[in-house]
Image 1 (tube, rainbow, N blue to C red):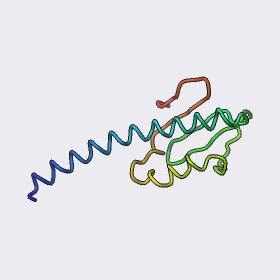
Image 2: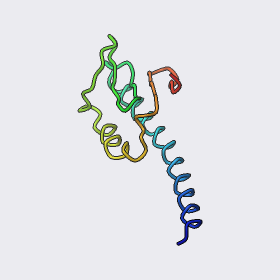
Image 3: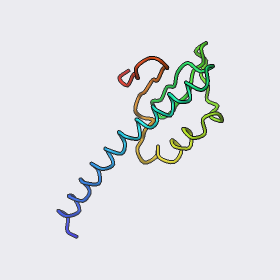
Length: 101
């Protein structure tokens, strides 16, 4: 493989990773909405700047992910590859998702 072939292969791989990253963010949003629908004590899910948390109706941050293992495991397994938690996202039940804040 020469340099030109490598660059072409790397560009193709980057495009695929970008597409998967967008799909992964949708998976995270869907998981968060499902958790919010099931757990009525939670008001919102926030992700950004390398971390994430839920908030209750008193706006207290909840970092306990025992009730949402699937979301936690997804982030644990793939965040280092796709840097999902660097993308800002606020999900509130019954409202649209805020991604530009």
